[in-house]
Image (cartoon, rainbow, N blue to C red; front, side, top):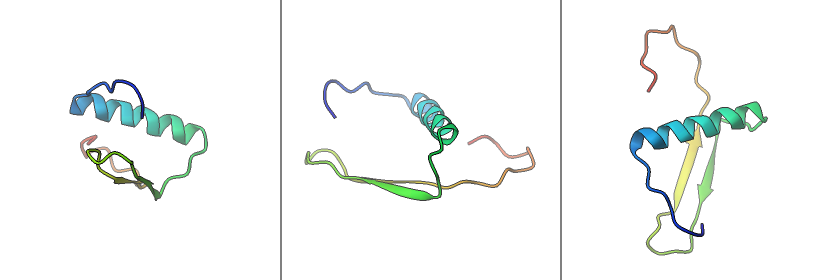
Length: 64
């Protein structure tokens, strides 16, 4: 990653992540898998992101 990084609130992060997942699904990106992101920088953690498709609920559950 290059340049300045904009810090996000948790709500902003979740909103942007939701938009990314929605657009990805519309463009044929498959889920039910994980992605590993390894960085060269010592002060940035390596992470694994897993996205799992969930069965639709009955509408009584909260969004998050």
